[in-house]
View 1 (tube, one colour):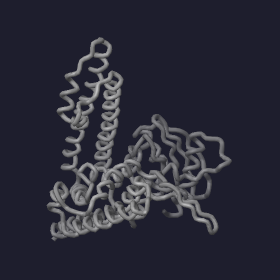
View 2 (tube, helix red, strand yellow):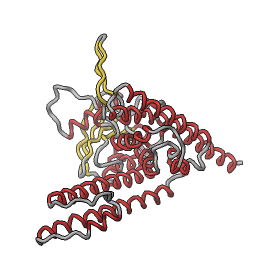
View 3 (cartoon, one colour):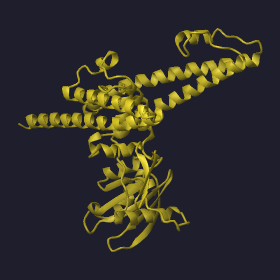
Length: 382
C-alpha cells in the first residue's frame, strides 16, 4: 500500500451496500448506500478515480464472494474480512449500516482487520457440493430416527441379527402393515422419506466423484495423496481440500490446527496457566471429518485392504509420511488412554495431530505439482 491509498469499507447486504472511505489525510466519511448489483459497484469504482490507489474490504457472510470477484475484475484491490476478529468497543451501543461501513474503513486503514482466504471457483464449487452431501446425511439420520421411533411406539422390533439400514432391513420394513389407516399413512410417509434420503445421498456422492475428476490437477493430486493416510477416504480428503484450500498457505501446521478450532483454549495471567476445552472457533466441517478419521488410529499400525489400494500410485515420500502418522498416532492414542484420559479427548488430541501429517502431505504434493508446472512452462518457452 502506498501513502495515497484510499481505504473503503463496505457493509454488504442482500439488496444494498453501505460505503465509507478512509482518506489518506485521516478523514473517514460515508459515501451513502448503493444497490448491491454489478452496475452500481462498477459505477462506484469509476467515480473514485485512479484504481491503483483504491482498496476495498467487506465482512465475510451469507453474500459470499460475488462482490470480491466483481471488484477484482474491475482491477481494484479487495479483501474479505473475518467478522469475528473485528475490534469491538465495549461501550459502543449504536449499530447502523453507515457506522459499520465507517468502522470497517477506519480499521482497514489502521491494519486492525484479519483477511480470510477466498476460495477459487473450483474450491468453492467442490465445497458447496461436499456441504450439500453433509446436509443430506443429516436429513437421512433424522428420517431414519423418525421411522425407528414410530416403529418403537407401535411395539415393532427389528428381527434379531438383522443389521439396520441394509437392503435386507429395507425389504423387511416395507413388509410391515398397520390396521388403522392414519398409522399406515404415517408409516408410508416415514419409510418413503428414508428411501428418498438414501437416494439423495447416493446421487450427491456420485456427483462428488464426478467433480473430483474435473478439478484442477493440483487439487486432484492432493486429494489422492491424502487418501494414503489411515481413516481418510476420498470423501474425507475432498472435504479437507474443499474446506482448507491450499495447505501450503499455512506456514506451520500449528496454524492449520488453529484454523480447525481443535486447539485447547487458554486463560493465563501472571504465573497461573489454565487451559480448557478446544476453542471450536475454527472450521467445524473440517473438525468433524478429522474426528471421524481419528477413530481409525485406535487399531495397531498396518496397511491392508482399502488402505493398501488407496496407496497405489502414491509416491514414496507420501507413503512414508502416512506410515509415520500411523505409528505416531496409534501410539499417542494408546498412551493417552492408558493414562485414564477420556476417550473423546483422546480422539480429539489424535485428530489435532493428524493435521500436522495432513499439512506435510499437502505441502509435499503442492510443491511437487508446482515444479511440474514450472518445468512444463520452461520447456514450452524453449
